[in-house]
Figure 1 (cartoon, helix red, strand yellow):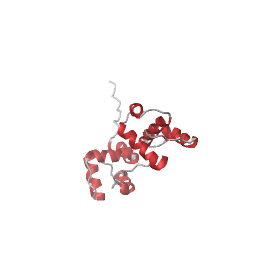
Figure 2 (cartoon, one colour):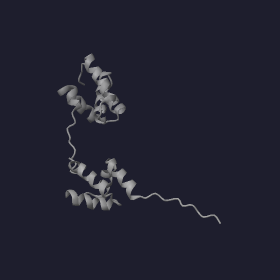
Figure 3 (cartoon, one colour):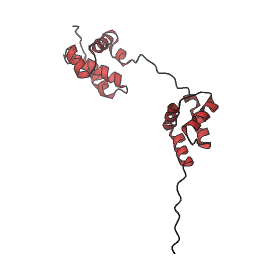
Figure 4 (cartoon, one colour):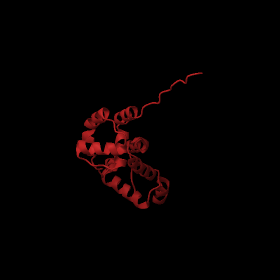
Length: 152
């Protein structure tokens, strides 16, 4: 088993990032390193942090190779959202022409941008864009009008 030495500055950074780093995976990595700094065995660390023993070893290898900066690194990148570039124009379009259904919005998005998305993705896109969703809800669903009944 390898031995690690932790300076007070590194311990303070680990303690902070365990709860305050914006990404939960980095928080998990910091928890593993924190438990190692407290003298726990790899089996105990894996059990307490709810990760595999191999993940414990991998996180500790990263820490040994590159320190905290290596632990904070997230090596994967998500796919770029093709609709993000068209967000403003789509919001303007949907404010002017609110869709009555997700299928209608799907057709409008494809016509405006050339990007075809599934209905679930279209619904998620509209939900994220509150201006689109709010305008759609207000304009496409008329409120019932209360009429008074004549008394005889």
